[in-house]
Image (spheres, helix red, strand yellow):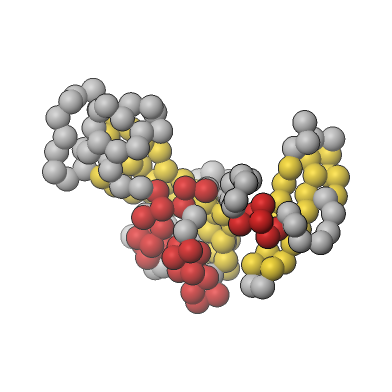
Length: 160
């Protein structure tokens, strides 16, 4: 029986866990991008969805050669059966792709994803050049909110 949490915000992330053996296996233990800097060893990728209070909602184990960006559709499908109140899906930059953003928007879905602030990225090219000023929030935080077509961007910058 599934828990009946009322959840409005889901934080999702992944990490890799390596094995101290050199042999891969067909199912899960595979070599891939290692967040532990151990790409020389087989690993698994572990995904975790938690509430805003840090309570785990669900976890996944993926093959070690699976990239973060390819896990979103499966995670969303697994969470579809849960009773989630106007759920906002929060993920990091490793999850960002046009296909994932379109899939998260389907059915009125909401999401927050981290976008890297690097030259040539959408954030630099469109958002930072868009009219509007940064507002100082704290000594080490200024924020600029921009709406471009159907997307809302909130750019956070630490000037220090």
